[in-house]
Length: 556
Figure 1 (spheres, helix red, strand yellow):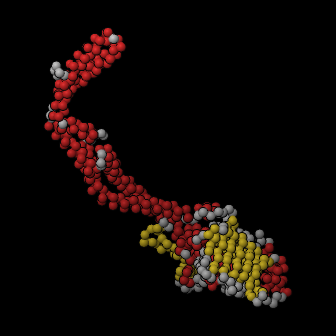
Figure 2 (cartoon, rainbow, N blue to C red; figure 1 turned 135 degrees about the vertical axis):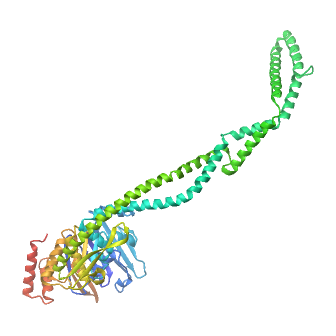
Figure 3 (cartoon, rainbow, N blue to C red; figure 1 turned 45 degrees about the vertical axis):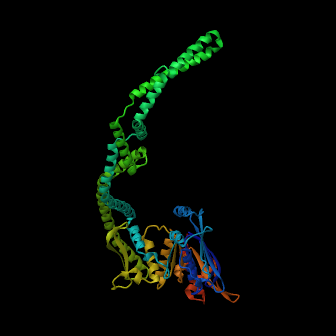
C-alpha cells in the first residue's frame, strides 16, 4: 500500500508531501491544479519514462519519493533481499531527474536499476488512465484476467509446468540425436583403443622389469667370462687367493696359541676366508647359469617395442596407458547407455505429450466457458457505468504452436456503440472507458493481488445516477485494495473514505500546487463546489451535506 508520496520540482509543484491511507481516496480540484502531475509522479515511481521537461523551470533536479507498506507482501521482501537490498515492512522508492542527464533510482537508500524498479512496483500499484501503459491492454494480462475469472489459474500453472517438462525432454532428445550421430564413430574408436590395450596384457611396473632382464641377456658373454675369471682367481689353483688366505690364517692361528693377544686377528682371518669361499661358490654357480639366449632376448625386445608403441598413443608410462583404458571403458559405457536413455526419453515424451494434450484441452474448454460468463458479467457492469449497449468479448484464438500459457491467446474486443463490430480494446477504448472497464473487471474478478489502484478519468462522460454507482463500485473495490481516484463528480467524491483537494496557488510570483486533506465543513464545501461551481450556494451546501450523510452509514 502507498503510504507517503513526496514530490519536489516537478512541473508546477515545488514541494508537496501527501500521506495516504487504506480505502478510497479521491483527489479533486480545478483543471490544471496539478492532479495529473501527481499521477505522473507516481508513474515515475513505477519506472515510467523520465524527461528533463518534467523539471520545474529554474531548477536543476526533480525528485519523487514514495513509501510503500509491504508488511503483507513477503514475495516483495524476498525479491528485494535476493537483489541485495535491505528491507523490513517498508519500501522507500526515490527517483531523481537531472537536467544534466544524471537520473538515479534508489530502493531503501541503495541505487537500483530501472528494470528492477519496474519489476518491483508493478506488483505494488496499477494506474488506469488515458496516458498510462494500461494493464488492461497487455495481452498477457488479458489472459491472466480471463484465467482469474474462470478459475483456471491452477490449471494453467499445471499445464505450464507439464509443457516445460515436455520442452526439456524434447531438447534432450534433440541433443541425443546429435550425440548418436557422433557416437557410432566414437564407439568404434574407443572399442579399438580399449581392445588394443587389453590385448597387450600390461602390468604395472612391467617395463622396468623387462629393461633389467634385457640388460642381463644382452651382456651374457661378459657376465659369464667375468664371473668365471673371478672364481678362478679366488679358488682355482695354488696361487688362488683362497689358498693363500688359508695358509696365512693357519700361520696366525699357530702364533696366536703362543700370544693370546692375536686370537681376535686369527678369528677375523678365518671369517674372511669363509666369506670369500661363499662368494667364490656363488660366482661359480652364477657363471654356470649365464648363457646367451637370443630367443628370449628377442621376445623381450618385441615386448618393449609393443609397450613403446602403446606409450606413443596412450601415455608416457604403463600406468598412464592403463588409466587411459579405464577412462575409455567408462566413456564407452556412457555411450552404450544412450540407447537406454533414448527409450526412457521416448516413454517420457509420450506420457508428457498426452498430459499436455489433456491439460490443454481442459484449459481451453474452461476458458471458453469462462469467456462467455465474463462477457455477460462485464457487459452488465459496463451498462451500469454509462456504456449502454457496449459489447465486450474475450476472443480465444488458437496458437500455431502451444506455449506455456496454453493452446490459445486471448484478446479483449470492445464496441462502445450498438451495431458496431467489437474491435481490439487497445485500438478503440478511450481513457475514461478503459478506467471504467477496469472498474468493471474489479467488480467481477476475485480479490486482486496489487495493493494499490489509481483511477484517472473514470468519471469521463457520466453523470447523475451513473456517477453515484461508479462511486459505490470504487468504494466496494477499496474494501479489498487501496484506491486513489481523480474525479470531478460530487457523487463519486462523496463515496470516498478520504478526500484530498489539490489546489494551484501563486506564491512569490511563482505558481505552485498544494494538497489538503478535507473533513467536516471543508469537505462539505468542496462537494458543494463540485455541484455548483465556484459560486457556492446554500442549496449546494445543503445538497452536499445530504450526499455525505447518505454515504456515512456505509463508510468504514
